Length: 235
Image (cartoon, rainbow, N blue to C red; front, side):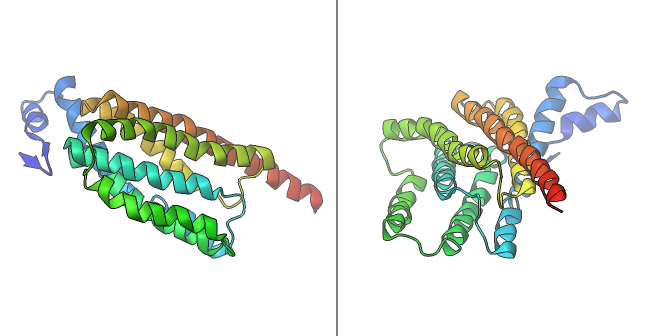
Protein backbone atom coordinates (compact mmCIF):
# COMPACT_ATOMS: atom_id res chain seq x y z
CA UNK A 1 0.00 0.00 0.00
CA UNK A 2 1.58 3.27 -1.15
CA UNK A 3 0.27 6.82 -0.90
CA UNK A 4 2.17 10.01 -1.94
CA UNK A 5 5.34 7.96 -2.21
CA UNK A 6 4.92 6.58 1.32
CA UNK A 7 4.95 2.78 1.59
CA UNK A 8 2.64 1.66 4.42
CA UNK A 9 2.75 -2.06 3.55
CA UNK A 10 5.65 -2.87 5.87
CA UNK A 11 4.09 -1.22 8.93
CA UNK A 12 0.59 -2.53 8.20
CA UNK A 13 1.94 -6.03 7.64
CA UNK A 14 3.63 -6.05 11.05
CA UNK A 15 0.50 -4.72 12.78
CA UNK A 16 -1.67 -7.38 11.11
CA UNK A 17 0.56 -10.05 12.62
CA UNK A 18 0.24 -8.44 16.04
CA UNK A 19 3.80 -7.14 16.19
CA UNK A 20 5.22 -3.63 16.33
CA UNK A 21 7.10 -2.55 13.17
CA UNK A 22 10.87 -2.81 13.51
CA UNK A 23 13.24 0.16 13.24
CA UNK A 24 14.17 -0.37 9.59
CA UNK A 25 10.49 -0.32 8.69
CA UNK A 26 9.31 2.44 11.05
CA UNK A 27 12.01 5.12 10.66
CA UNK A 28 11.62 5.62 6.88
CA UNK A 29 7.84 5.82 7.35
CA UNK A 30 8.18 8.41 10.14
CA UNK A 31 10.67 10.35 8.02
CA UNK A 32 8.27 10.52 5.07
CA UNK A 33 5.32 11.53 7.27
CA UNK A 34 7.36 14.22 9.03
CA UNK A 35 8.62 15.45 5.69
CA UNK A 36 5.10 16.01 4.43
CA UNK A 37 4.12 17.58 7.78
CA UNK A 38 6.91 20.12 7.30
CA UNK A 39 5.73 20.81 3.76
CA UNK A 40 2.17 21.35 5.03
CA UNK A 41 3.30 23.60 7.89
CA UNK A 42 5.59 25.58 5.59
CA UNK A 43 2.59 26.94 3.67
CA UNK A 44 1.89 29.31 6.57
CA UNK A 45 5.19 29.55 8.47
CA UNK A 46 5.91 33.18 7.53
CA UNK A 47 2.29 34.33 7.59
CA UNK A 48 2.40 35.30 11.31
CA UNK A 49 5.41 37.54 10.62
CA UNK A 50 3.70 39.17 7.63
CA UNK A 51 0.48 39.69 9.61
CA UNK A 52 2.37 41.20 12.56
CA UNK A 53 3.99 43.77 10.27
CA UNK A 54 0.65 44.60 8.66
CA UNK A 55 -1.07 44.88 12.04
CA UNK A 56 1.49 47.26 13.56
CA UNK A 57 2.41 48.85 10.21
CA UNK A 58 5.99 48.72 11.40
CA UNK A 59 9.21 46.83 10.66
CA UNK A 60 10.88 47.94 13.89
CA UNK A 61 13.78 45.69 14.82
CA UNK A 62 13.77 43.76 11.53
CA UNK A 63 16.91 43.52 9.42
CA UNK A 64 16.10 43.99 5.72
CA UNK A 65 19.41 42.43 4.66
CA UNK A 66 18.66 39.34 6.76
CA UNK A 67 15.38 38.66 4.96
CA UNK A 68 16.89 39.42 1.54
CA UNK A 69 19.70 36.91 2.12
CA UNK A 70 17.16 34.37 3.37
CA UNK A 71 15.26 34.68 0.08
CA UNK A 72 18.48 34.08 -1.89
CA UNK A 73 19.27 31.06 0.28
CA UNK A 74 15.83 29.51 -0.30
CA UNK A 75 16.22 30.04 -4.05
CA UNK A 76 19.57 28.26 -4.21
CA UNK A 77 18.46 25.43 -1.91
CA UNK A 78 15.26 24.81 -3.90
CA UNK A 79 17.12 24.86 -7.22
CA UNK A 80 19.71 22.39 -5.90
CA UNK A 81 17.11 19.93 -4.57
CA UNK A 82 15.19 20.08 -7.86
CA UNK A 83 18.43 19.53 -9.79
CA UNK A 84 19.40 16.55 -7.61
CA UNK A 85 15.98 14.94 -8.04
CA UNK A 86 15.32 14.54 -4.30
CA UNK A 87 11.81 13.37 -3.27
CA UNK A 88 9.31 16.20 -2.74
CA UNK A 89 8.97 15.29 0.96
CA UNK A 90 12.67 16.12 1.41
CA UNK A 91 12.50 19.69 0.12
CA UNK A 92 8.88 20.64 -0.65
CA UNK A 93 8.73 23.30 2.06
CA UNK A 94 11.41 25.33 0.25
CA UNK A 95 8.97 26.22 -2.55
CA UNK A 96 6.39 27.59 -0.12
CA UNK A 97 9.03 29.31 2.03
CA UNK A 98 10.50 31.02 -1.04
CA UNK A 99 7.12 32.43 -2.09
CA UNK A 100 6.40 33.70 1.43
CA UNK A 101 9.94 35.10 1.78
CA UNK A 102 9.45 37.18 -1.38
CA UNK A 103 6.12 38.50 -0.08
CA UNK A 104 7.73 39.26 3.29
CA UNK A 105 10.61 41.21 1.72
CA UNK A 106 8.13 43.18 -0.39
CA UNK A 107 6.12 43.96 2.77
CA UNK A 108 9.26 45.13 4.59
CA UNK A 109 10.16 47.37 1.63
CA UNK A 110 6.67 48.88 1.67
CA UNK A 111 6.81 49.78 5.35
CA UNK A 112 10.42 50.97 5.12
CA UNK A 113 9.59 53.93 2.86
CA UNK A 114 11.41 55.80 1.57
CA UNK A 115 13.63 53.00 0.24
CA UNK A 116 16.94 54.26 -1.24
CA UNK A 117 17.33 53.76 -5.00
CA UNK A 118 20.46 51.68 -4.37
CA UNK A 119 18.36 49.20 -2.37
CA UNK A 120 16.14 48.52 -5.40
CA UNK A 121 19.16 47.23 -7.33
CA UNK A 122 19.22 44.07 -5.18
CA UNK A 123 15.66 42.87 -6.02
CA UNK A 124 16.19 43.74 -9.70
CA UNK A 125 19.34 41.61 -9.80
CA UNK A 126 17.50 38.80 -8.02
CA UNK A 127 14.66 38.85 -10.57
CA UNK A 128 17.22 38.70 -13.39
CA UNK A 129 19.28 35.80 -12.00
CA UNK A 130 16.82 33.64 -9.99
CA UNK A 131 14.98 32.07 -12.99
CA UNK A 132 18.28 30.81 -14.43
CA UNK A 133 19.31 29.26 -11.11
CA UNK A 134 15.91 27.63 -10.53
CA UNK A 135 16.03 26.16 -14.03
CA UNK A 136 19.46 24.70 -13.32
CA UNK A 137 20.87 26.32 -16.44
CA UNK A 138 24.34 26.86 -15.02
CA UNK A 139 27.58 24.87 -15.01
CA UNK A 140 27.33 21.81 -12.68
CA UNK A 141 30.56 22.72 -10.88
CA UNK A 142 29.31 26.27 -10.35
CA UNK A 143 25.99 24.87 -9.13
CA UNK A 144 27.77 22.79 -6.47
CA UNK A 145 29.83 25.80 -5.41
CA UNK A 146 26.70 27.93 -5.29
CA UNK A 147 24.91 25.41 -3.11
CA UNK A 148 27.91 25.16 -0.80
CA UNK A 149 27.78 28.94 -0.44
CA UNK A 150 24.08 28.92 0.49
CA UNK A 151 24.97 27.60 3.94
CA UNK A 152 27.06 30.72 4.46
CA UNK A 153 24.20 32.78 3.00
CA UNK A 154 21.72 31.38 5.52
CA UNK A 155 24.25 31.89 8.30
CA UNK A 156 24.86 35.50 7.32
CA UNK A 157 21.11 35.97 6.87
CA UNK A 158 20.66 35.22 10.58
CA UNK A 159 23.72 37.07 11.93
CA UNK A 160 22.47 40.63 11.12
CA UNK A 161 19.15 39.86 12.85
CA UNK A 162 20.86 38.19 15.83
CA UNK A 163 23.22 41.15 16.19
CA UNK A 164 20.43 43.69 15.83
CA UNK A 165 18.45 41.91 18.57
CA UNK A 166 21.50 41.78 20.81
CA UNK A 167 22.57 45.40 20.32
CA UNK A 168 19.07 46.81 20.90
CA UNK A 169 18.12 44.24 23.57
CA UNK A 170 14.82 43.92 21.72
CA UNK A 171 13.35 41.74 18.98
CA UNK A 172 10.98 44.44 17.71
CA UNK A 173 8.31 43.07 15.38
CA UNK A 174 9.81 39.59 15.07
CA UNK A 175 7.09 36.94 15.26
CA UNK A 176 7.60 34.28 17.93
CA UNK A 177 5.37 31.82 16.07
CA UNK A 178 7.30 32.16 12.81
CA UNK A 179 10.67 31.77 14.56
CA UNK A 180 9.40 28.77 16.53
CA UNK A 181 8.17 27.03 13.39
CA UNK A 182 11.52 27.75 11.68
CA UNK A 183 13.35 26.21 14.64
CA UNK A 184 11.10 23.14 14.88
CA UNK A 185 11.21 22.64 11.12
CA UNK A 186 15.02 22.70 11.12
CA UNK A 187 15.16 20.01 13.81
CA UNK A 188 12.78 17.73 11.93
CA UNK A 189 14.56 18.39 8.62
CA UNK A 190 17.88 17.16 10.09
CA UNK A 191 16.20 13.83 10.83
CA UNK A 192 14.38 13.53 7.49
CA UNK A 193 17.48 14.52 5.48
CA UNK A 194 19.49 11.78 7.15
CA UNK A 195 16.74 9.22 6.56
CA UNK A 196 16.33 10.25 2.92
CA UNK A 197 20.13 9.91 2.53
CA UNK A 198 20.38 13.48 1.33
CA UNK A 199 23.89 14.88 0.65
CA UNK A 200 25.88 15.83 3.74
CA UNK A 201 25.69 19.46 2.66
CA UNK A 202 21.88 19.33 3.03
CA UNK A 203 22.16 17.89 6.55
CA UNK A 204 24.75 20.55 7.44
CA UNK A 205 22.40 23.29 6.24
CA UNK A 206 19.59 21.98 8.43
CA UNK A 207 21.94 21.76 11.42
CA UNK A 208 23.01 25.37 10.97
CA UNK A 209 19.30 26.24 10.79
CA UNK A 210 18.74 24.62 14.19
CA UNK A 211 21.56 26.67 15.75
CA UNK A 212 20.71 30.06 14.23
CA UNK A 213 16.92 29.76 14.52
CA UNK A 214 17.34 28.52 18.09
CA UNK A 215 19.47 31.59 18.91
CA UNK A 216 16.84 34.00 17.56
CA UNK A 217 14.06 32.12 19.35
CA UNK A 218 15.94 32.33 22.66
CA UNK A 219 16.45 36.07 22.10
CA UNK A 220 12.71 36.57 21.61
CA UNK A 221 11.96 34.74 24.85
CA UNK A 222 14.67 36.62 26.75
CA UNK A 223 14.09 40.15 25.47
CA UNK A 224 10.29 40.03 25.43
CA UNK A 225 10.38 38.93 29.06
CA UNK A 226 12.78 41.80 29.80
CA UNK A 227 10.52 44.30 27.98
CA UNK A 228 7.48 43.07 29.91
CA UNK A 229 9.27 43.66 33.23
CA UNK A 230 10.37 47.12 32.07
CA UNK A 231 6.80 48.07 31.16
CA UNK A 232 5.57 47.01 34.61
CA UNK A 233 8.22 49.18 36.28
CA UNK A 234 7.29 52.20 34.12
CA UNK A 235 3.68 51.85 35.23
